[in-house]
Image (cartoon, rainbow, N blue to C red):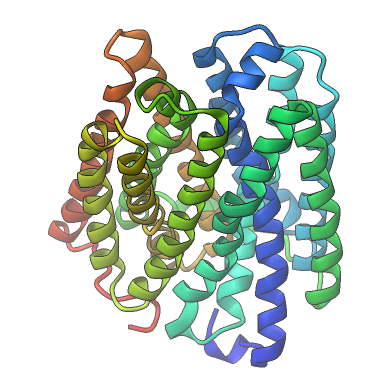
Length: 398
């Protein structure tokens, strides 16, 4: 990922755009069930917390599939690997659209999830390789911009489609995004040489280093804080804000705007200081989460707090992803993919924690409080890493 591997600016722009299109599709399929939980739960005759396990199942599939799919597809050229992964994405969404019951849908979501970690892992390596070292965090953020824009356009559109026509049509429409992404990757990325057979044990040993483990644990906590709120945002708004389906859709758009702002800020500040950016945004996410039960009682208060929360919660993504890639420089592809798996393990932890809080009778107002505690735990992990001398004060350009 040195500067000698960078592409001309125009070419690198097209490559980052193609990666962002793939990220847009993946973000749409990952996040749209959260806005459709009540609809899906009714459609397959299960409770909302049970339907929430679809989110957890997807996350667990990402976590399990990330290292396996990365090692399998790393033998291909980057373009072929990324196109094949989007093929899995397309197939999984078609299966979801055709699912007749809850268990079939659960299995289909697992199939869809297999592409996720490897796509973002390999995509982050490609993104970082086409820009100078001091712009790598921003390049990774550009790819993830597709993920955040999905929350502005793709997720609300899928939510609206699912509410008006049926959740199966939402998955069918998402499958079409996979076809578009495959075409964009084929057009923008050079064919390249076939990949080399990975030295599995050598790369796995890199992942056992303390800086890598601490960085990944931070990713888990930050993601758990994000998805602890986001998984249940529709029922939380319906219960505490007395929100209509239209208002829920509007709030999903607003959260997506917050994600997009946060992703941009996270990339910019991570080019300055990885640890500093991570601590700043995790602390901000914790503070806003703690305040959320007080602010979400009115429509105006909910809009403000969700916008700020979205920006703070997603701004940690570029720095935590770049931290892992730098800490595991000898195995960036595998480490990056596994970190995406760690992000989705945090997704599962957050969704499960929110479900436990609801089942335990604490109410929907306790969900963001639990998320805030997990964000605070992420801050403590970064500080612990700095105390051990494993912190990363500056980004790739240091």
